[in-house]
Length: 322
Image (tube, rainbow, N blue to C red; front, side, top):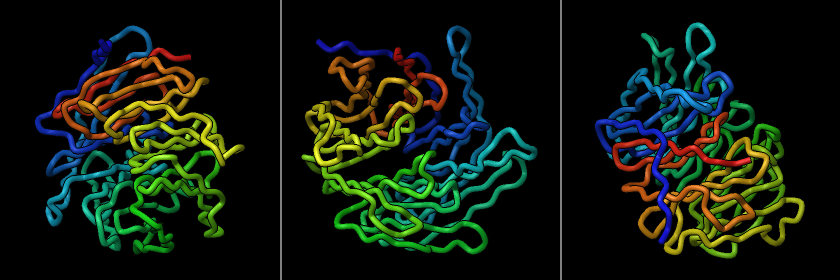
C-alpha cells in the first residue's frame, strides 16, 4: 500500500483553479498568480523555513478575456517583476486559447493588458526568454513563436515544428538558448540569436506532455513522455541518462527542483492523478499525494516546497532533500 503524504499548507479559493505559477525572481519569489475562470488572482505567500506560521494574502484580481471561453493553460512572470521597487512592477503573461495576454500592474491603480494574436490553435506553454527581451510560446499549431513586447507587440521569429509544441523553457545561465519540446517526443535546444538548432534529443516513448531544464545544472533536461520521466545529460545526449517509469497511465507535467544539490524531480500523472517527488537516483517517492484535478505544478524558488492544485485548493508540501 502506498504512503500518501498530506500537504503541510493549503490556500483555499472560491472556485476551481485552472492553472497557477510561482514567481522565480529574486525580488518577488513569494508572488503567486492563480488563474480562475474569469480573473487572474495575485497572491503573496509566506512559507516557514523551519518553524513559524504559514501566511498568505490576496493582493489583486485582474480580469481575463471573455472573448475566448477556454481556460488559461499557462502563466509566466516576466524577469522584470519586482515587489522591491516603488511602485511595484508585476508583469505576467497568460495563455488563453490561441492568444497571449500580457498583464502589467503596480498592484494599485495602474494596470494594463496587451493581447498577442498569431497562433491558430491552443497554446500549451509560454516563457520569457533572452533575459525577458522576448516572450516565447508553443502551440498545437506546430509552431514556437517569439514576440517582442516593447512598443507595438510583434511576432518576430517563428520556428516550425513537426508536432504540437508542449513546453518552452529558458535558462538563467544561457540567455540565448531556448528548450522547445514537441508532443511526438523530440526536444530541441535553439539558439534564438542565430535561429539555429544547437542539439536535439528524442524520448523513447510518446506522447511527450511536458519538459523542463534544470536550473542547478544547465546540462540536464527532463521530459514526461508516455508516463516515464526521462532525463538527459547533454554531455552525452544520444542515450538518456535515466528513464524512470513513474505514471503507468501517462503523465501531465514534470519539474526539476530549482536549488537542490541532488537532482530532485516532481511530476503529476495517472492513475488517479497523483503527485510524485523523487530524487533522481531513487525509486522511492519523497512525496506522493492524490489530487482531484490537474492545475499545474511548481516549486518555490528558495525553499524546499513543491505545490500543486487540487480543485479549489493550492497545496504545499515540504520536501526533505539535500
